[in-house]
Image (tube, rainbow, N blue to C red; front, side, top):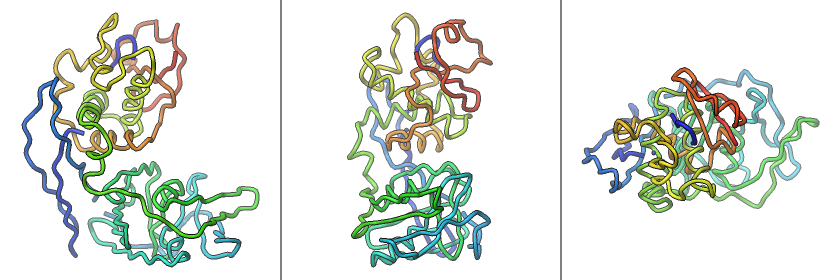
Length: 309
């Protein structure tokens, strides 16, 4: 908890999909020193959905491809869900759905996606995408939030609530680039080490949205002129006072649990649950009046209150 102002520990992963399901194998690592981040490794994969339903228990929305009625989507708590299989089929890309006791696997030429009904994330081409309302199976297909489908297939789906229709236009799809070493190639060792560590230390018992929020605060500070310009610098900032309590007792060096690791990758993917917040606090642990007097609250997630100044 920041006192005034306001981390993927490597988990070696081998994902094996077989007829009976998936298993996870984790490697060993030597804890790094606080000044020498270790090499980051891939975060864990996903677990298990039920059998597909004939039709989802949600309001359906007609989906048009270049003006032709071709498919249907669904509205889940006002969030649009689409089938990547139907979209790819329209553009001549065949996807294969395999549903087993340990997950749903969607594959195609250039795509490998794992999803579990009820989880708040999916894994596509070894990258993590945020699905806060989960995923589901219906009509013999996998349905994902529209923003995940757009990102995964590199297209736009325009939903018109007034006309209750979705329009998808384009000449084809291109799959999300990734690979098992995507994060190591795309982000610094410092980001991949320290971001899950601070998320774990500050919010491992919080909802996934709250973990993402803690990571957002750290990166918001990195971008701000008021704070250090590195993740490590922000975490160990001692301007006026220690900014994050876990650095005092060494809690920030504890090995991150699985979900904080995934949360850190979602943060690096650009997902944000707290906007421009620069501060957070758990009022149950005591808080200076400064938070309420000088800051503006933004959102409360779990036990954490987030603020801007």
